[in-house]
Length: 118
Image (cartoon, rainbow, N blue to C red; front, side, top):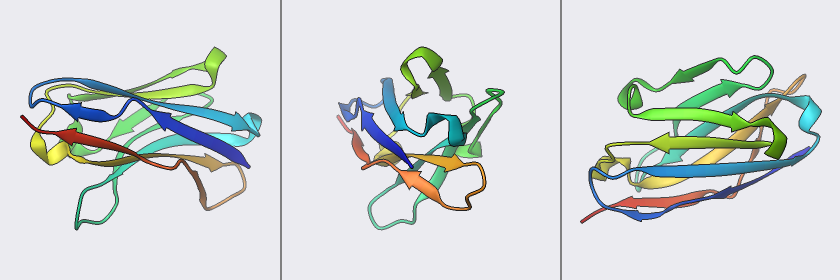
């Protein structure tokens, strides 16, 4: 199992930027990929960005392409999600999730609130 703790959320003005962190602990060696999801009020959870753990390949949701960057600090076992030019529709609870080799499910973080409002 992998334990995940998100941080860095909060209230941001439209047009601003935010960097979320997801610190992983536990069976780090078993991580295949790290993924960020988000869930806005009244909506289903949606994919935001993913990074393969071993090769650092990335992919993004079309709605965030060009505004979001997923990155990793291997020494800290931490994955980051930077979002620029934030919009009110980016308001959501953001979750990081680890997919492990040989498993079809995710290990989830607790989620962190991001609110974009003036």
